[in-house]
Length: 145
Image (cartoon, rainbow, N blue to C red; front, side):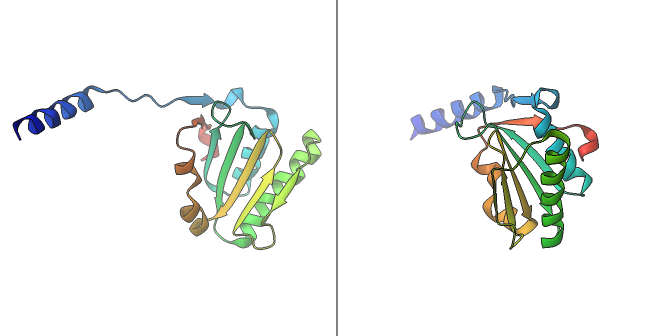
């Protein structure tokens, strides 16, 4: 019994001395397409915008952009804005769109990055940030919020 107590106290002491540093990717390092997609989501009043750098832990894409809308119409409007502006300004076309009709969770696959646009309840349910918590976050500029 005494050994257990010592072991627990040692664990506690070590835990207090640990310094956790979160790895962050600067916004300036992102491709123009990713920056524009984030800006478009912000312009259409998406909230809780998060960008995740998957380059070190996944091979199917480099970045996730995750954003929320308040209802189906806003989720679709955010999706429309991103696809239209990327096509107009950078001649970048979406490879695949999933979930547009229901508007609960729209996925825009651009190959190098994937945009996830959720209604709030769906985002909380699927919790992609938790699933990809080992990835680096992208430091978004203040004007995005």
